[in-house]
Image (tube, rainbow, N blue to C red; front, side, top):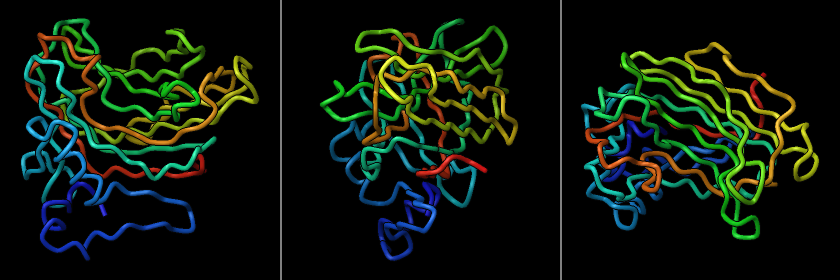
Length: 231
């Protein structure tokens, strides 16, 4: 089940059942999409053929220059200490200030850890093209471990983020890997992590990070998440 099948699944839910496979694979399914439509700023989320990168339909997250949330949320993570997420992403020529960034993915802890994002993925607008970087929360404040920028063309890409918690808050032995189109650009085994587990994941535009000059939309498709690191 993928975002690509959501429109069909709304009218025929058996095409897209909630699955819990041996590899602990989670797929964002109809229930999560419907929650997004009714709670998380439905006017900034759409499922349509234009956004499709796999199958017939994909997810379009629309930014209109306001701080309106536009994301879908997966609540299937159960306080995970190892987490891997993979999805297709197309910057789709979004209008952004050169050098501007915003968050398009976050995996977040529960309230006992201050609802801090264990890992996030930011998109940056360059003079020509786009770039992404991953971040891991280090402290209860704003300190984060950051990867360097990885250039992206204005075209569909497959992005994979992997994270494993450090042995204790502030201890530099956590894991972070960022892979784009099958190539690993960042792999670190010295990451500190304030957040000790992951409870949910969000995909789309996270309002507090979107600059008012940002307009247009990003496309997403084929979201999957796992309790294991990649082989």
